[in-house]
Length: 288
Image (cartoon, rainbow, N blue to C red; front, side):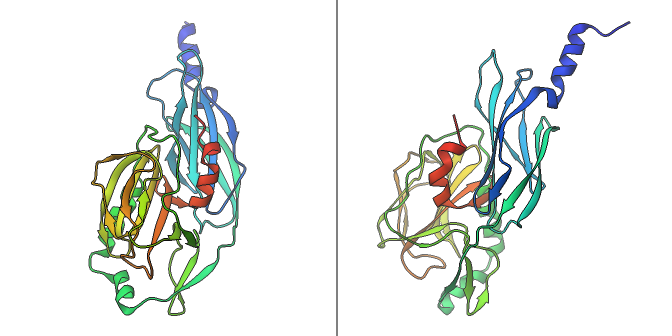
């Protein structure tokens, strides 16, 4: 006896490769910038999950449009770290854990500068502060928060000031190269100047930490978070809802800092990318 036609039809539709269609996918990305893809998924299950795999790690994609009578739209984003090795990488898009698309992409080097930090003995000691490992674990976990809903409409610059530190910089202390790279941008501004929420969101974390000083982390939804470091004062509490442009803190020089400034970071799924690039490109990366 043959299988019922409805069963055959559902079997075909349930195939990830049949149900997911790639509209646009990057073939290259630059260190410190973003890799993106847009896909459509044929309607079948209300609990569909789409994920992007790059650098052998997965990140959830997010639904950006849906019509009961047509395919749903999804956007996939991944930040390319400043220290990602240049070369060819495998790209996979998964639907409900099953491979639906595979290709390759080239990671292009950027050429970040190196900068010498002149720190006092007191400031250098903060790198080895008691409990520092637990602080880092908490901060990184918070920055990787995933909220399915998109909470913002637009981004605004969080402070008025002069950019003095670039994303991706390698730092030296006492002539020795520090591990890692600068994960945001530094804007110099007078102590006490207002620091603004860069977009609508929710306060995930606020407090004082050894290296970061007084800091705030905001969740903007769909894997996007922002961080505000070295503040002199924090004006929000965890769980507060904020709007773009709200004053959330004051410029300072707490933590490992040599002068008043705001260190500002943008993260996608917990990985930092260049905030200057983000402000220019996010409307194109995150189509509604």
